[in-house]
Length: 388
Ligand code: DI6
Ligand code: FE
Image (cartoon, rainbow, N blue to C red; front, top):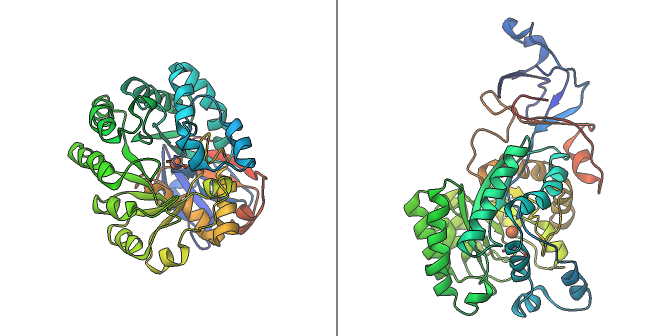
């Protein structure tokens, strides 16, 4: 039981009863059912309690870093120019292929710990820096292993369609058919895939190529999501919505037909301000249009070594508000309830009976106070599956 706290999203409620891994009751302390009154209690002294935060879009497992590219961009090179010159994602592929599974885990752990320290209880981790069967599987195994090592739920996403590897340069179709799709089948066979993602972009894969991957995902019964409309509008979000996608992510260049298609399927718009900031983009995602169509919006770090070297979901929330004018309530829903939807998880992201007892306790009074600071972590404590 957690009395004396202000539960986010539940007007006036101040007490949460937990049993094992679940929330079993939420309400005001005076109405606490008799049967729970003898349970051990944790007094949170009026602190804000939110669902444990959920980072629904990360590339947390990778080898090396890309600080040199950061310097190149400061000298005027663009993200796309660097990618086309063989840098970018492909340079991380080289470093990732050179790392063993335990090295990948060791390099990812400090990043994961930084997220956990901010109250994250569920994190999605994508493959996509192996781009061959062996290393894509290694990345997914490393991601799963991280979830065994720390008190956090890891959801794995297969992102074989992230970039053409050097050995298939200019042969995207062959890569999709000969490597990406067989690797997806193998990873699924090992139980390593919770969802399937693809990067639909001029520097990555065409809508037709992405559709081929999504056909196989559907055949395997796996949900899909997409990196779409980040640098240009290829209609990727609409394509993904046609496959009932859980989410379309980035979407700075998303147009009205794309928003409408997402609204029909309930596809979540995942807003990634870290990449927008890092690449100094100017085209903002169509937040007003998403609101008008009641498309759920999530916010995530996109933690990756190139376009978003960021491991702070609180900072992503702050940026979503400051850069894109999302309200603090929207930013918080984006890191909890809607982030759960973006992962297809119906048992978390809200404080309600039956939900997992994943909670974050904050030394603040309101969501606005949580979102407005920059570079400050007010986490008081974290409860994961009912365990403080
Ligand atoms: N979009 C992104 O923001 C990341 N992947 C993608 O498709 C960037 C990955 C990287 O630059 O390493
Ligand atoms: Fe990404």
